[in-house]
Length: 45
Image 1 (cartoon, rainbow, N blue to C red):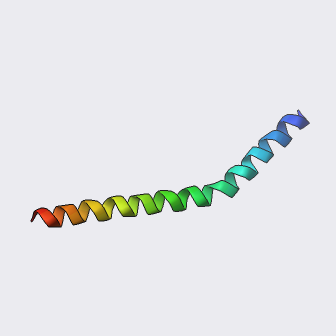
Image 2: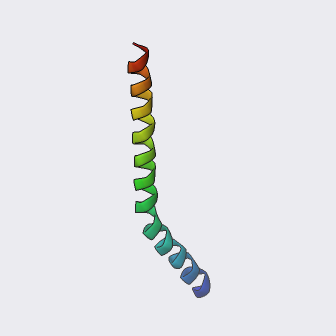
């Protein structure tokens, strides 16, 4: 049981280390997508 707990805590630590980077990348991708969408929309007007 202790080994399982250690593995789980290690995975959670890695996840919390990666999560901010993933959120940052997702934010940048959403920003680029909305920017290109708005620019193409304004171009059509």
